[in-house]
Structure formats: structure tokens, C-alpha cells
Length: 408
Image 1 (cartoon, rainbow, N blue to C red):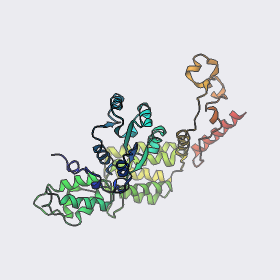
Image 2: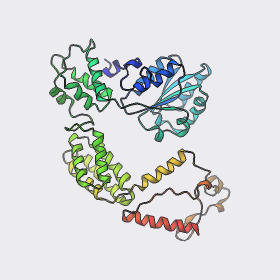
Image 3: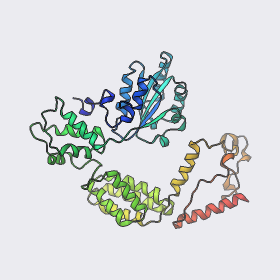
């Protein structure tokens, strides 16, 4: 039998929960279809919010001209086959799952079709399209964000499912659905999977104690004080960033209680580069080593390793120069601030004019005055340094020396 989440997937906009701004009676997408003015769009939001469901409902209105493409598993050849359909139809619709994984070459192939309106693209992604999808594609689409599904909406859905013929004889105590909604971490699919699992107990009233016993700890969601899991992760990072070691240990304890080692490790690795960075670069190596040790040991012993490295992170000097510097460079490039690479550092030019390129190692201290940025950016500064640690102070000193060297 197919999973419950598949069997009850909405087939009409009226059954989609939590996304009235898009598919409600006056929702934007519903209006597009009513007015026959569907445009290319990117639907983005967290897992389980209904992106794929909405895309399939849209496709149901255009069954003869709709196609699906998965950017993580399908190749450009398949997309070319789909695009061939524009020769036989005035317009086609292509739903592209995981569009953030589509490489630049494939994206470029799509541009002319989308630009001319021959192909209406509906991209689906869990990532922020402003960061993960190139500007050329973004500028040709409406970016539509899906809301996080609220617990009350999930509870309403579970009550509705419980009234279906298949499940109407199952009795759930009043606290069970709120528990499932919280434990599902805003994911409808997860909530339905939990509901279906509990219906294995056909001849019993399903109590909160049974739900806790058979579903285990809430999946990445709550501690016993009903804090949202990701709020606790964020509080841990902010405490480390603020150098409050006691607060950091408090939030670490909450996370350890939930027992998801992988997500703690990912956050600590992020912190080591995002918040400590060049102020203490050796610490990122220690964090990586500690995280591997924690995985080898598992809980409960891993708590000692995590505690040690969190103390180290919290008390370390802080620098976010790595993040600020690359974000400024990305912002400029993605907003059209770019230019031609200087000819004297292009390999195809050097091949015929070798003397144009000054090989630094041929000069004292491997230093030679030479322009590397495009002409229109040659005076641009991206490295936004801090001097909160000995290592970065040394880098800054070197940086300022090189700036001065190249001026004279």
C-alpha cells in the first residue's frame, strides 16, 4: 500500500494547508490560472510545506503540456527533449525539482525559452533562491515563498484524516495530535507518517503516553520546555558569538538531550568559520577533529567532547571577516558589477605573449606590481578585516604592506 502522505496528497488548491497567500481563494497562483496568465516562478520554502503538491496541482490544469525535470538526477539531454515540445505547443510547463542543483550550463540553455515565454518554468527549492540560483534565471521568474506550516494547521489536518472512512474507528486522546504536530517540526509529511504509524494499534485508544513511547523524541523539534529546535541551535550560536560560555553550555545541554549529534556537529563546524574564522584559524581544525571523535564515540561520551569544543569556541577571539568579505564580492558580482579579466593573466593570452605576465616567484620575496582585478574594479576592496586575534593581526599587517607596495 502507498504511504498515507501520498494517498492524501491534495489534488485541489482547497485542500492545501498554510499557503492561502498563494493558493487560497484570492491566492496569487490561483489568480494566475483563473486569468490564464501563468508565469515562470520559483517556489521556495522548507521541506514539507507543499511545494511539490502545488506544482502538481498546477500541472493538473495543463495535462497535455506539462513536464517534470529533477535537477539532481536528470541530465541536460532530457531537458532538450522536453524543450523540443515547444515546436508543437504554443507554450509548455516544466516543473524543475531541486532547481538550485541545476548547473550554469543547463540554466543558460533554459534562458531563451523562458525569456520568450515558450516555456513556463516552475522551480522548486528548499534553499534561498537569492543565494542559490543565478541572477539570469531569477530575473525571469516570480519568487514565491511558502509559509512554514503552523502546528494548528497540522492538527486540523490530522483531525480531518481521522474522519476518513479508513481511520474513523481510531480514537486518539486529545493531546496526541498537538504532540504529533510539535514533533513533526512543521512538516506535514512527517506528521502523516507518525499518524499512520500509530494506527497500527487498531484495537486501542491511542494515548499521549503511547505516542511518546512509539514515536520517540520529537524529530529535531522540541525539548521538554517546548522550545523550537532551531531556536535552540540559533541561541547556541549567538551565545558562542557573544562569548558567553555559560549560556553556550546551557543550550548545548538542551541539544544533547534531544540526541541528534549530526546537526550539533554541523552547527559547530559552521560557527568555527563563520564566527571565529581568521581570529583563531587553528580552532576550526580542532573543531573538525573533535566532531569526528564525537561521532566515533556517540552519546553519552560525545557530550564531553562537545562541551570541550564549545568552551573553546565561546572563549576564542572572534572574526567574521571571511563571511563579510565573500558576501560583498558575491553581492557585487550577482548585481552586475564585474569586468573583463586582464589580458596579462589570461592563459590564452600568455601563450602568445609570455612576457606580459610577471611570474611572482621570479621576483624578490615573490612580490611584483601587477593588476589582477578587472579595470573597473581595480581599486575595489573586498577583504574586510578585523584584528581580534594574533593571526589575523599578522594577516592585516601583511595586507596593508601589500596595499602600500602596489601603490608605489
